[in-house]
Image 1 (cartoon, rainbow, N blue to C red):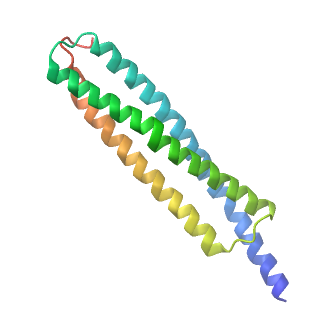
Image 2: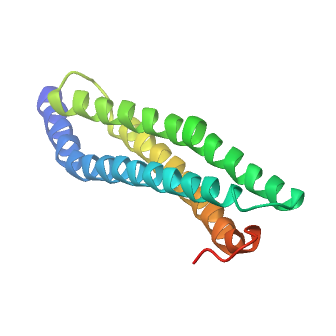
Length: 143
């Protein structure tokens, strides 16, 4: 009877994995898009560096460059690696290669969701700041 109960619980767990796989794929897609955006922002800053003559404006643009570099090489790289590891973990559960319980699985997925929420807010704040300031940081209009 215990084996049947275990099998039923395992089947319920595997059935819920479809949603978590979708979440992971959405997260990886968002990360790829953010990396694309950050490259664009870096090019925008580089283009405006050529126009900037005031030291204060140059320092502000340098700070944005540092933030982009940190987001790309640290924050996004770390979160992307963790989401990929999580996706691999989900695949192992689905294939039956892991004896994980429902509580552990849900906690792991919730942890990844919180990390994605944190990086989403961080990137949103960065973009709001950049959008609010980029035109003022150039000596000329961007248009």
